[in-house]
Length: 261
Length: 258
Image (tube, rainbow over all chains, first blue to last red; front, side, top):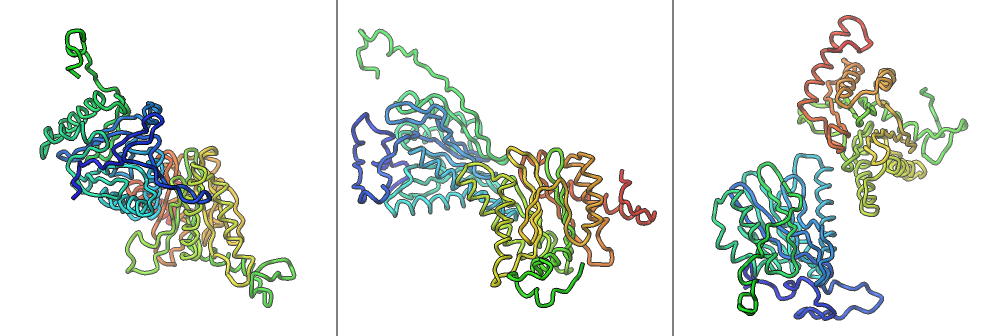
């Protein structure tokens, strides 16, 4: 049984190790040359997203890096997007696939605006829609190579739902994907409590992003924090994390050797 | 201008001896008999107003919409056959969405109007279909050209105007609009003025009406939306009073508001 937070072998590799194929992710044989190829591996990728609920909303955090394998290539990729007035989506994985998903999200919200009947897509409905899209692509063995989190606050209820490239779809109180599953999830689990305040939740998520910067070689310290609450969606401008590198273990390596890291 | 086109008016595929296509003209009659629709280009946007005749006391307020949002930055007010108008608004929404998918930006006013006009025109060239019984007022906040008002009629011609009116009260409305165009109003001011026009041209002996208004421009952040109730309500009331005062003073110019 797949439990949330379990990393799925294929999607756990954020990029391509220089020259080689990612392990556990052998490219599938392409269809005959005249057919279009199906998605086989992510190219420009975003790494782990971290999210959790708090009392009165949800918070999602992500860095702004688009990695080209091990190259930190695109420094200003906005990986959290707003969807209508009450929902937002954050994505890790292939960023060009996420751009496509962004188009779908914008289109479906446009339909609501055109109907103009006062209905707006709830976070839960958006989550369901994205799950359908992702599962259908997976069933054609041509996935949109993303792991996403849908967050929002509507009618007094906070919503946080995960969807991934396999179409796996479930609701959560706290969430981390990609590499952050290893690095941030333990911190989230220890630090999260039911009914925590917005400030506490933002702090927790920021801490997770900091630790991700220390430990994940495909991350960056330039991050965004997005909050959904009764006031709507607020996605911060990217900001630099506080970093601490003056650890004892990094000094005088002739004494400490390689033990401390 | 009510000439009978006996024998030359059975289908769009016939001209009359004096070069008219009567079926298209008859479609125009559907527009002429509809509630008045006015639109005005302002310094910071475009405002449209519809005299929505309420055909039954059982109707829920706000239903039977005559103004449609077709894109973020564009809307269409419909005069004439309501169902035809809805079909055209859907068509317009499709055009705008396709343009956005292909070119990544909002459909320009000219492009939208031409596509819609072309679509309407197609139905005037075959005997197996009928023309749309609508005139459309298309308000657009064009990315490069700013606020625009385009008008498409049953023949399929689409033109850009600074202000326009169609429907029952169009003659009188156009006279009032000509004065307004010169005043370079903002959207906020225009809401009241257009409300007054609609109240003025409304025929008291006919059914009661609901005022439906939309704007696209600075007050709405560049998006086509209905004029908010807290602005429309007072404007509606003020216009009704102003017109009542004027008619009791036997002065039918429709000015004199405070």
